[in-house]
Structure formats: C-alpha cells, structure tokens
Image 1: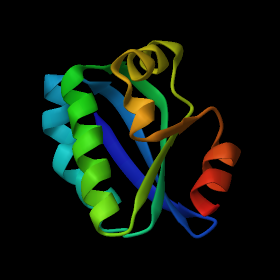
Image 2 (image 1 turned 30 degrees about the vertical axis):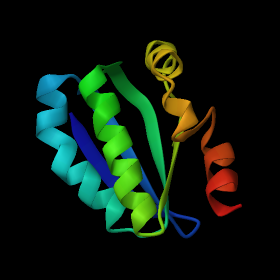
Image 3 (image 1 turned 120 degrees about the vertical axis):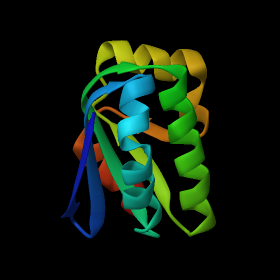
Image 4 (image 1 turned 90 degrees about the vertical axis):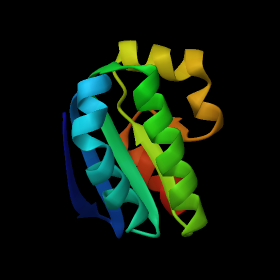
Length: 112
C-alpha cells in the first residue's frame, strides 16, 4: 500500500494504491493520517487504485476523519472501485465520510 499527496485547486489530494488489509494498513496508516490531519483543511482521497478494503482500513479512515475534523479538516473520497464502493456502502462509511464518483465532484464538495 502506498499513499502519495499533491495539491489541487487549493486542496490536498491523497492517492492510495494497493490493498487496505492488515499489512496495507500497517504500512500506510501513520503516513496517511499525517497527510490528512496536517492539512487542517479539506482533503480529497482518490481510491481508484485501492483493490481491497478490510474492516481495519475502514477503522483507519474513521479515525483519520475524526482527527481531521478536530483540526478543521474534512475528507472526501472519490473514484472507489466497485468492490471498495460495496464495502463502503455495507459498512456505512459514507455516513461519516463524503463519498462521490469523480474528482470534480470531490473538489466541488470539499470547496463548498
């Protein structure tokens, strides 16, 4: 699992690539959390290259979203693969973190 970040329209964009299973979360949790929480502003997260999302990954997302909110930040996920979107829906993650289909929607929601 890898996490990379860049800037887009005044927002921080984080791209995740790999599997968010036990090994993937272990390899990226601190980096991902630091990228999101340190921004103290909206962060959009590209999930297009995430091939698997386990409950441990969902826990990582919830914890990071809560930490970001305490610092005035916000998470918006986009481009989830069908398999990952199904897990997000099943686990009710979209009730905590905004999830949209495209980057343009993510940018608009984060800026709005």
